[in-house]
Structures are given as structure tokens and as C-alpha cells.
Length: 218
Ligand SMILES: Nc1ncnc2c1ncn2[C@@H]1O[C@H](COP(=O)(O)OP(=O)(O)OP(=O)(O)O)[C@@H](O)[C@H]1O
Ligand SMILES: [Mg+2]
Image (cartoon, rainbow, N blue to C red):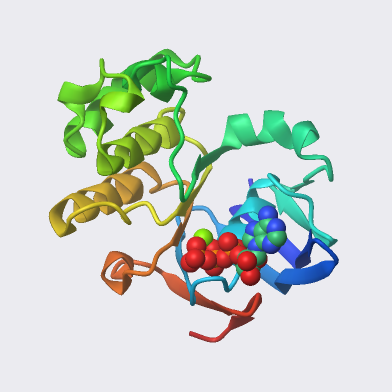
């Protein structure tokens, strides 16, 4: 089996904002291999979240294509849902959780693998969320919601984890605990982390720098 997980070929994303076109991602090519930890940094508005959406198939590129495990992601995001569900863990910059489910139910939503519950409990322990597993999201702080989203993204042991500022609402020790959990859970998977905190990328294999939608050498 090839260890190439993800391949983006010349992907661009334009948003139509009223009559104005915003080129959020401009002809980006990159590859992520199994076991790799890639950092993605760049100024606010440089297109980091937009690029993650393209890599996950959550948005269709205006041009170019993304291959996940050798399969070209369909242009319609709902057609790639099955691939994403099976292979990708996504941590959104603004964590969102289903309000009427508790943390445990949010985390295990799509996971049918019996090992998922056990894995999730271990992760909860590692990031200080064990006591919160029975709580609904409205009872959680911002940082707790972010960690609840982490449990959801990792519960099914996805092949690829895309995390958008996973430590933004956390103090330094908790942030490091989250990064350690991400790293531990992706030893045989791929990990892409967007962050404004270089301290969270100390163990990264590569750091990509995005400016005005383009990749630059970091
Ligand atoms: N839905 C949208 N419609 C129109 N423009 C958008 C939309 N989403 C993002 N943009 C624009 O695309 C550009 C890239 O945004 P993006 O959210 O990808 O940046 P970012 O690097 O993640 O920024 P931050 O560090 O602040 O999260 C920005 O100019 C932004 O205003
Ligand atoms: Mg962003």
C-alpha cells in the first residue's frame, strides 16, 4: 500500500463575495504521507482554513483536484461525505457540537467500531475531559468545546486529521496535551495542523507557510 494519503494538485478556491472575487487559495500543490505531521501557518486571512476545507473535500476547488488515498474527491461535497466520514478527522476553527447530545455522544456519533469508545475514553483522560463526557455543549467552556471536538475528530482513528487551530482557546499545558494526543493518535496517519502558535509545531516534520493563498517556503 502506498503511504501517500493526500495529494493536492494545483488547487485554487475563489469565493464570490457580492460582485468581488476573493482568491482564497491560489494554485497550491502538496502531499501528505502516512506518519507525517505537517504544520500550516500564515497571516490571518491567508487562506489556511479555506485550504483545509479543500483538502477535506468540504468545498470543491475552483480548479485543480484533491486525491485522498488515491481517489479523486468528487466535486460535490455531499458526494465525498462517505470518504470523509471513513478516513478524515476534521477539527473546525469554530468548534461546533450537536447541542442536544452530550460530549460522549457527540464524539461517537458516526463511529461504529467498538474500539472507538475505548479510544475516546483514553483521549478524554489525556486531555482532561473525562469529567465532562456526560455534559451537553452549553455547559462547556470554549476550550472544553474545542477538546470535545478533538474527541470527535479522533474517535474513529481516521487516516488523516486536519486540525484548524486546535489549541486556540487553551492554556499552554492543555494546548500541549492536545498536541500530544493528536500526535499519539496519528502515528500511522497523517496530521495537518493550522496554528498561530509556533510552539505547537515543535515536532512537525514540515511547516508550510501560506501568504495570500499561495504556499511559500517557510
Ligand atoms: N465564505 C466566504 N466568502 C467570501 N470570502 C471568504 C469566505 N471565507 C473566507 N473568505 C475570505 O477568504 C480569505 C481566506 O480566508 P480563510 O478563512 O481561509 O483565512 P485563514 O488563513 O484561515 O485566516 P484566520 O487565521 O483568520 O483563520 C479571506 O480573505 C477571507 O475574507
Ligand atoms: Mg482560519
